[in-house]
Length: 76
Image (cartoon, rainbow, N blue to C red; front, side):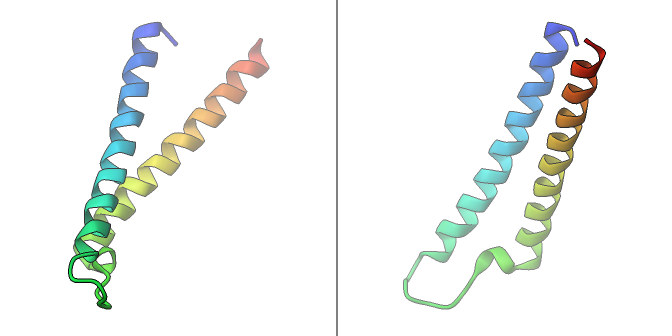
């Protein structure tokens, strides 16, 4: 991969990871208001769907990177 392509890919992975962490942290902190209570906001469908999509994208990107690195190492 060219250096510019690598940088773009790394920025995409970092942005996706930051979005996932940001959404999860926001929802978790929303649940800490007025403690103790039994409301779990990250189980709400809107938040759960967002976290599922971002988490799945992170897993897919991680698997693609592992496969690509293994392929490139094998070629060398």
